[in-house]
Image (cartoon, rainbow, N blue to C red; front, side, top):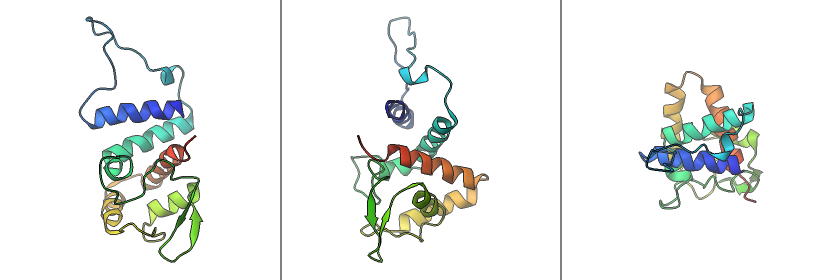
Length: 150
């Protein structure tokens, strides 16, 4: 989870026009974050790709920001819990749910959140992404890692 926190902090800085590296002296030497001590695993690479997509496609604006009104559920603590759908059915937010919901946002409509924003954003993803299944897998892996809070 510490590695994920480092990725999120770095992406938030980059997404806001900043830099994820810090100057440690007047010679502007760069400090290597602790989570970059070895080669990333395939899962870490997938999560990092999903984090980058969440920033690039604006998911973070509604799902990771505490400053904006929620037009969708927050990714923090989302995976690993049950949500109530508009049909009244409760479902567990797991990798299968996330993949299906990202692939077809109308399949699982979560009570209390408008669907129109997700239709627009995910419709854009479906049209413009050449590698749609891997993009969806990366986003699902990222959301799942942000999931249950310790």
